Length: 113
Figure 1 (tube, helix red, strand yellow):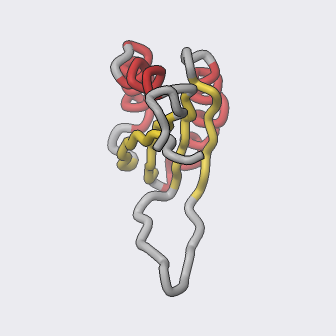
Figure 2 (spheres, rainbow, N blue to C red; figure 1 turned 90 degrees about the vertical axis):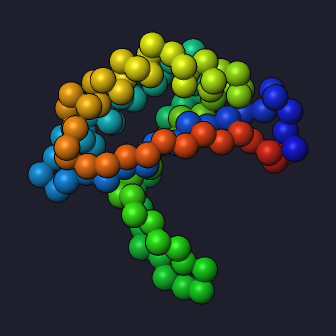
């Protein structure tokens, strides 16, 4: 298992209504990406769109999009989760997209390598 100093990620999964999807993607790829680059301890932000997957081990993915913010340590992630920065980012998201979709947040710590 990784020590306390291992990397950690903050994951946001979201769905967005079709009429707000273009604005959502533009905002995430420009404004949110620039904000993430300024977060202390954040090594980067990656965005993903769900792909259909069929097969023996396929699961049901209710989310259209996932963004992964990688942090240099669990401590840096914890600082971000409890920061005024995240509160401001959340308020901005809500002001733009409240009622246009759903989202959930998850945190993970690196355990290998």
